[in-house]
Length: 234
Image (cartoon, rainbow, N blue to C red):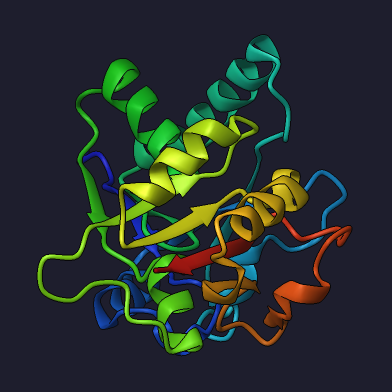
C-alpha cells in the first residue's frame, strides 16, 4: 500500500479569501485535515480560517495539541504524539493536510512536524504549499510599502535585547517585528527615542474579522494578542 503524502498548507494571515487556489484544492482532496488545537478545545486560528471551505462530516479532523511552554521535555513528548497520530493515517495511504496560518516554512508549527518526520519516517513524501504571511498582510492592510529599489527589509522576532533591536532598526529601511506583545512597551520607548514612533504601525490578527489596527500613541500598557505585528518604515 502507498504511504500517504503529508502536506503543509499555508492558509494565509486570517482572511479566508487569502488562501491560495492550490491550498484550497489540497484541502478538498485530502481526506485528513490536521490542525493545531487548544487544550480547552477551542478552535485554533488556522482552523477558523479554513472552516468555511470544509465539511467536517466529510473529513477526518485531526486536532493536535502544541503546548505553549519552553520545557523541552514536555514539548518533545507532545511533538512525538502528533507525529504518531499523523503517521497512523499516512500508513493507511491517506493524505494528510496540516494547516498553518501564514506560510508553512516561516515561523510555523509545521516546521517542527516536518523535521521530525524527516528524521523518524524518511519514507513519507512531504510537500508544502506557500501561503501569504502576516507581514505581507500587514503591509497591505496598512498601506505601507516595505521595499522599493535597493531597500533593505527585515522580519525579526522582537526580544528583550533593545540594543539588538536598535541595530536592526538602524540597518534596515523597513522592519516587521513579530512576537512583539511581550516587549511592547520597551519597543515603543526605543522607537520614541529614535524619533520613529510616527513611522510605526501595530496590527493584530491582520485581515481577519478580529483585526485591530492600533493607535501607537495610545498603545502602552496594552495586553496585545500574540498574533500582532509591528511595522516600522523609515
